[in-house]
Amino acid sequence: MGYTQLLTPSLNIGATAGWCQAYVDNAIGNTERYPTALATWQAMQAKGVTRTGNPPVGVWVPIWFGFNTGDCVNYGHVAWAFNHGDGRTEIHDSEVHRGARAPYQSIQELLNWFGAQALYYLGWALADGNKTVVSEDGTSNAGSATMKGRKNMFLVRINTAMNYSGSWGSGASFILTADACRYIETGDTLAILNNKLGLPTNNLDGNELARLLTDFGTASIIK
Image (cartoon, rainbow, N blue to C red; front, side):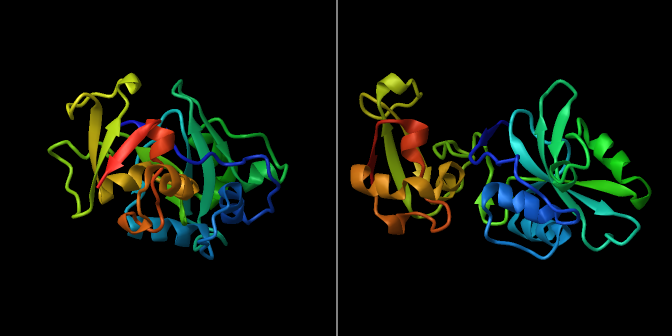
């Protein structure tokens, strides 16, 4: 599974001790906020966007932790992580950006920093609140036999110069369901899509609107 960065956090902002979730939220302008890092993790679990294991290589993702003891046991902890793929995972949190220390170079280093509070790693997520940070590559090619879509389907014809594989007429193509579009969408290009491609807004999910121009270049969409 590969991952694509959809939203890059602005890491070099100020932070306040104990306000780790606010730091992570502020770095991407998230407006769907929860009272604690642990509450945010649980909300992301409910949305189905959390993952276990090491953060993916080459993209920034939010990572969460729980506390076994201490005053923060009901609050949790959250940070931004970038897995460099060479055994080093760079991590930025409110401790780093309040000036208490340099960025961590591994999850274990962060665990050690919190010491007696017995921090433990929960996992990472594709999103923080209402901001999708990374997409899972491979899910947007809805023409595959494994893709289960909705009634709304769009045929996207790609200019052959884009070198996408496909077999629709003389050009390459993808067939996208509304579900597939969720993985290649942001709200930024809705107006562009409507103006240049004539795609009506009511055919797209409200919170995650198509980013087809960015991903596919010159394309025609046929409903």
